[in-house]
Image (cartoon, rainbow, N blue to C red; front, side, top):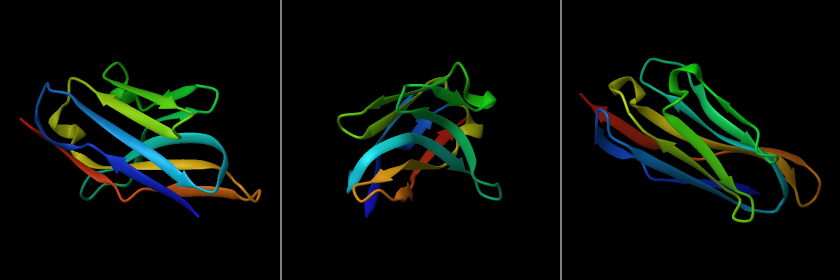
Length: 120
């Protein structure tokens, strides 16, 4: 069983910054990739950014240059620094972790999500 928990989020004015954190725990042999998705009301869940265990990053075009994803492998954690926030960044943000469990099974685990609201 792999658990993923997000921290951070909240209300911020346009142009401001927020930092999201996410930690995975449980029977984990190796994490292959961790990342962040978001879903606004009426929209599909979309990838924001992800990072592999080798440090390779991938960003949605809408956040490039404003958001930075980073990881701490030892802590099985991933972070999302969000700068120059816009009202259109308002959404529920979900953390995801993919990898191999301690018994050799693949896993994909989602967190419960955290709300980010950007006021204009």
